[in-house]
Image 1 (cartoon, rainbow, N blue to C red):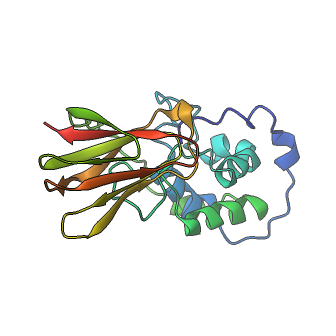
Image 2 (cartoon, helix red, strand yellow):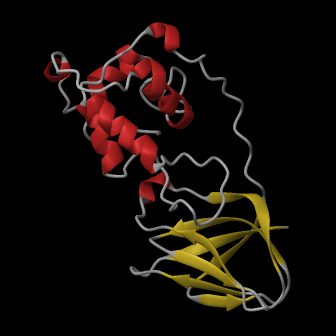
Length: 215
């Protein structure tokens, strides 16, 4: 999660102070681990957004965080899970979403601090691979092999590769596009596309994509 700007200023910490506890989910066991995995790389001291590394920091904004998650505004990741295997995937799984929502709606309890995980360690971000950028609108056929490093979408798009043997590989699906994030999605490993592969793009709103090929 990189920003919580819409509802945070509207949320009232006082309104959360006396919520009835109706859940066994706690910050110290389940919820802090989800935050460590998906949120605190940005939401921490020295990060790009307000810190949410402790219960004291996160608890006042619990309901705002729930709403951001349910509206798919956070974490900043538009690619639909299961289509493409990308590095630095910040998206929440459905079970993680269910746990976060259940925790908030159950009163957002803290739990026993003895169960808190160790503080996460943050490595320097890996530089994205350098490559040749090729604009894709509707379709194109490769005149030579391509090692596809990543895709930068410009709108809601679906991109697939029809290989010469007739196999179709679905590369990325952006169902809901947030232009302010300006994200490029890099594959864990470059996708090898042979000569004669036809790249196909569908967009319901006239979007296109930049294909990032290894040099």
